[in-house]
Image (cartoon, rainbow, N blue to C red; front, top):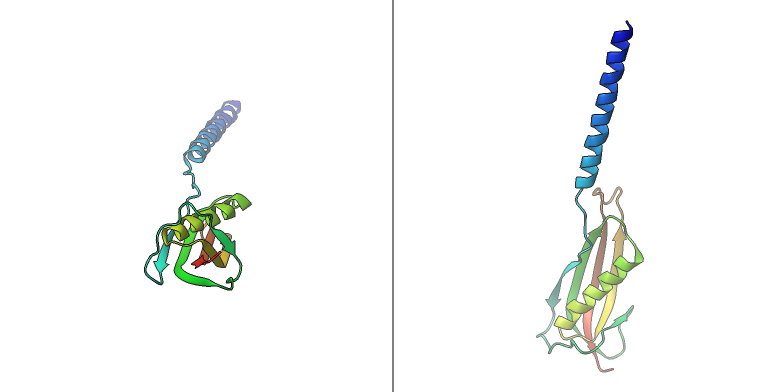
Length: 137
């Protein structure tokens, strides 16, 4: 009887050790999700010269004297949402706006959607919608 208990104990310990090793291997093989914004600009008018050297000013509403150049759409996914990710999204949208010849960006929506009912994926989603503009400032 003691021999059977000893064998069962050894078998259980071996099974537990194998389970721990398998868990550790799977945990280490889990893919990482780098924060990489992706986006597109949709021109409204003929593209103006690139404004790479000018800073892009971000607006919450349209300034008095402006010309709308393009729609800007950017999005990204992340496992660990933070404020740096939001700033990276705005920076990426600024890069897209420069390609349209803009010197301003009017934010229409800067949306964060965490995992949950509306977003069944395990990743959080950032989505930014804006309009690239050229001002006389």
